[in-house]
Image (cartoon, rainbow, N blue to C red; front, side, top):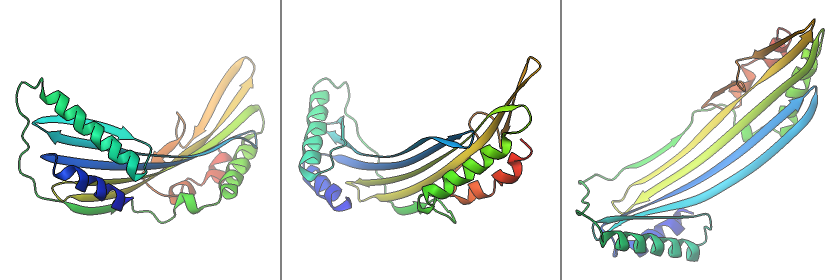
Length: 216
């Protein structure tokens, strides 16, 4: 992907005073279990590129989720056309301050990639936790996990290249009890869908869901 983006940047370089390209790919996994039974399992991946140019003293922007070279060159041309059209009505010319190039790479520090843990292992944990909570006056128990992996790449005509990989993990469990005209909800580790952090699957393991399901 980086080579294609660099080719697009080279295509733009002689036509603009500045340009940058942002590629974003987000992977998501969501698991929901109710009363010991899997109720929902979804995985998805979304990708896209945003292209921003400064030409004739005005900004132009266009984006695409078609990532082949031809489609991205058409997107770059569209951003350029928008900048040129905007320049016709500009009140003043946009000029950027000088900026050094930045070369950097960052990955969320994790000890266990949630996307390398099998779906079966994650589902089994929620099934066991929700079954434990089905006792006494508990009529419904539920649990959920959500995991995100977002990769971002930024390159610009000033020579900057920045790559980031961000992991987010979280989830929780809840029990609903009904009795004597009263309704109660208990949840762990917090209300409103659980707890989330920019960490890996170790964050889930540290919740000790099975132990805390006994108390919920």
